[in-house]
Length: 195
Image: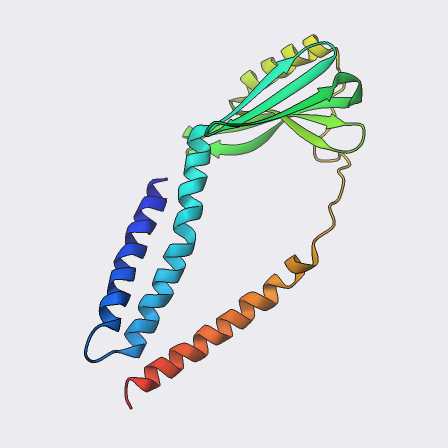
C-alpha cells in the first residue's frame, strides 16, 4: 500500500509538470511526451497497488463447518460474499503453499486450505495460514468436523479449464501497437522541438 502511495505521489507530480508545460510560452514537446508517459505509467499502476494493499489489509475469509454443509463468507470493506457447499459434493481437502513472507532463512510460508469438488472446481476454505504445522492442524480439525478424509494432490488434481475470452487474445496486439505508437510519438516530439 505504501508503494501505491509513492506511485500516486509521482503521478501527481508528473500531472503538475504536464499541466505546467502545457501552459508555458515555449512548449517542449519531447519533455511533455516523456512526462506524459511517466504520468501514464505511474498513474495506471498506483490504483492497482493501492487497491491490492487495501485488499490485503481488509480481506477476511470465514468458514462455518458442519457435518452436512460448509459455508464460506468472504468479507471486504463491508461487502459479504457467501457460498454454501454440501459436504457430499466435496471429493477431498488439502493444504497448499500460496505465498512466502520474508526472505531467506527467516521466511515463513503461507498456506491455504482448498476443497476439491467432484465436478472439478477448487474452492478456498481458508487462507493466510502461517506455517505448515498450523495448516495441517486446521485441515485435520476440518476433516474431523466434516468426515472427509481424502487428501488429493493439488498438483495432479483435474481442474476445469476455462475458455479464454476472445478479447484476451487481442491484448498482445494492443500492447505492441501501443508501444509502436508511443515510440513514433516520442520521435515526432523530439524532432518537433528542433523545428
